[in-house]
Amino acid sequence: MIGQLEDILAQLIELRERAIAELEGITTSAQLDEWDTRYLGRNRGELKNISAVMPKLTKEERPVIGQKINTVKAALEQALKDRREALKQREMLQRLEQERLDVTLPGRTLPAGHMHPLSRVIQESTDIFVRMGFQIVQGPEVETDYYNFQALNVPTDHPARDMQDTFWVAPGEILLRTQTSPMQIRSMKRQRPPIRVVVPGKVYRNEALDASHEAVFHQIEGLLIDEYCTMADLKGVLERFAHEMFGPERRLRFRGSYFPFTEPSAEVDISCASCNGTGCRVCKYTGWLEVLGSGMVHPKVLREVGYDPAKYRGFAFGMGVERIAMLKYGVSDIRLFSGNDLRFLRQF
Ligand code: 2NL
Image (tube, rainbow, N blue to C red; front, side, top):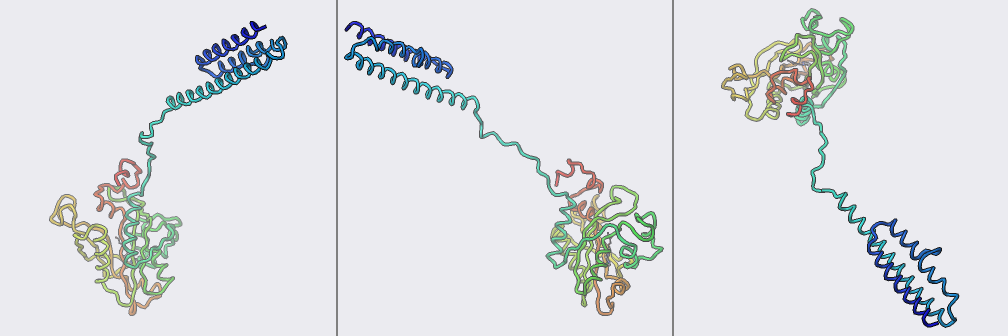
């Protein structure tokens, strides 16, 4: 039976060669599975078919063939495993190639907002006053006639109280504040001197609107009360403010003026930054730009909050935030600040 043995061995060698050659050409895992069943399948795999002859072999031949079959089986199993691994690698490389990412591409920038120019001016201004020892106070926009007018020595027949100038909520009683002074009156009633407060906030005036007038605008008011306080202190504080806000080259000029709540009163001009005071279109050839109103607190106002004018005196000032921002940034129309046009806002 030597012939049969050799025949089987030859079949095994041929099977192994063929199976491995075929394996080389396989490119998908479905083909691999198909190959697996065809050659190594327990049911009708080619190797199984060859093993079927085992019972016909002699006792001596059986282990020889059995061992050979096992060797071929192990070789094919190993080859299958290697091919699977190689295919996996290939698929991974293909995916890496296809799903390639350029990590050097610039990211998508998210649009970031920033402070409104008016908020910035308010923040910068209050910072300057905080450095000079003032406290920042805020309060309601809906006020009483008493805090907005009476306590400030604004007479009942004063034109500011007129229907044309004030937005009344309940005529003669409740109104939208026309300045932030009401909070300063409250501060004085609440505490004793020395007092140093600054009140930023929204104010309302029923005015004809144009490039320099809005019905809703912002104001920063300051108040200082102490035993020894003169106009020189007022000038010093305002000069410091102007220098920090507009630059140390700017000069200030005080012009006599009138407000019901201060006596004496002064309007303050700043030397024009465009021409350095020599005169140009910006300052209408005067060399000066009006920035704020100020004065020594009127004795009637001091008395109203319970202070003895013989013992205490103080100064106060008020400025329009929009006006400061217009001067600082060279804006020619106040309405731009409330227009919400991003082309304008993005410039700050
Ligand atoms: C201006 C002028 C000013 C004040 C506001 C004030 C407040 C108290 C007492 C006295 Cl509690 N005065 N405030 C004083 C002078 C001027 O504002 O032209 N504002 C835009």
